[in-house]
Image (tube, rainbow, N blue to C red; front, side, top):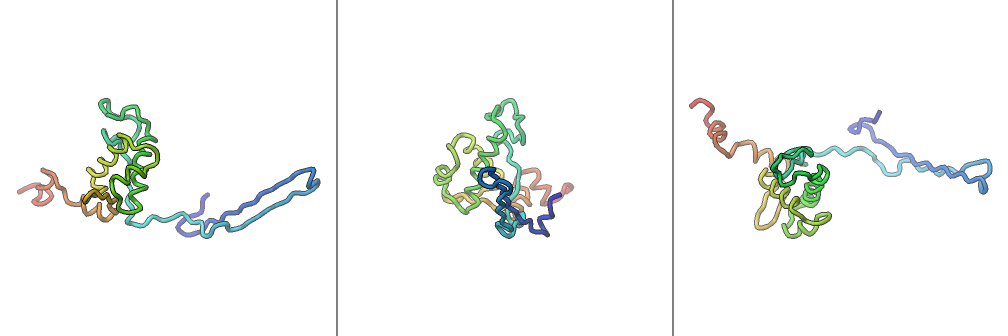
Length: 163
């Protein structure tokens, strides 16, 4: 059973046993180091770190079963997730110029990366101002989506379902 990461630090124990019959005929050399990096608790994500699924940027599928007319049909799910992760990793460091983002992603910038960035913008996860991209915090995103912006939900939200 894993210890509860919110309460107990998990200490690492490193023990190497090296036994060579010609050098140490009836014994073993044990090298031990306790608490190699303290503390070893699992990080608790602060409330402002955005957490979301990575849908296909075209058909919004959340697994490898894309829609038949999807531009990325046949693209494996790890590749879709990698495109998002490449973007999010760079955006979590702070505001980034879009050109710099394209150069700093792991691997080549391709249509999947472009579509994933467009999806993040459309979904309101990334804001853009003067060519600079910024990942919204969870609180900012919550505020952004708390009031509907499209009809008819906008009218229902403001005036209720019965006039």
